[in-house]
Length: 415
Image 1 (spheres, rainbow, N blue to C red):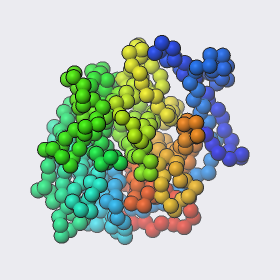
Image 2: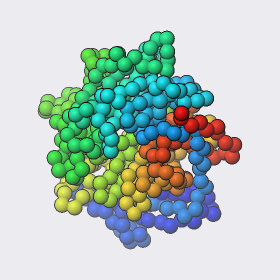
Image 3: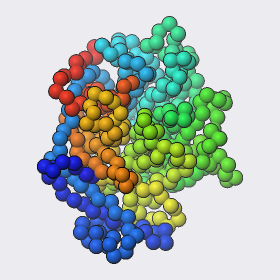
Image 4: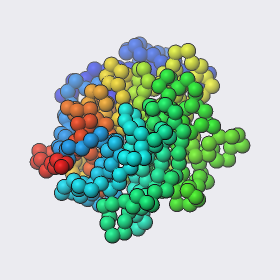
């Protein structure tokens, strides 16, 4: 983490990762890491600068009185669509929260803890075709992706009889569902699926390419019935019995991921196990197929008792330990216009502490974070409006705007 500005008080943690013969060793001994790096020459150094003081962003309340916010989406206009874990998608039309939901799937889901209605994504051509997609855990716990169509004469209501199942993935345990949906710049639908375990992924789901769990999937919802597999998916041509939908693997619980709306870069926030929270990065134009290491690795570290020599992992670009929080909540790279000082920063948070961090990439490709602010309530998700302005959903049922300016944004309360 790096803090800009001469008056910022910082402390430095230097992490050296030493790899030889496909084995990596983590050194966390401050100045000793510098000495080892200089002596060996081929050590990867990650320098973490932790801010004691930093300019804080402001959170301005926009809508309150909601319940269990899990996702915030836009359809390319002034409206916001707020997903409630218990099964409703609420509509904020820019002025008020509408009484009628966009969609009600309460009778179709299992809830709550880590189950429920998890996310919403609008088709890139939503204005023409009226299609939207939701992800939820059904009544027997399967992670389900479903398609709906908007009523032609009511853009704020989905036709529930148009429901079309896209995917149903067996998920026997209640935790680690992930369940994020997002369309990439390539027009394909990306789906995150957790490893399905709360026991360190003892079944090795995340590393097993014959299972859907612990993965990010990529599918083409414009062709096939109900979808097809893109020709450029990384495992499509493999002769083994692998899941062709897999785009990336080795993930524990990628609760939230997002694409940079300008560059197409992919940011994956993977919730850690016993010690490390991480942000993984995939540059635009990637061929996919990355292995992010879980369940052999957690963050940049090989887990105790595991042999990591058999994999070539893609290490996280950002991470923090559990003395700083408990569960990472992925956000977005800011591409709006109202807060020019934030442009290009990637925002993410910690669920337990409410800390909001901003990260920037240096010319040499390394990423650095600083503490940007703190929410009074636990942060469950981020959102992005049509103009690229960032939103935060907290556990107390409030949607906030991220701001650096003094003028207040009008706030609304659900009826």
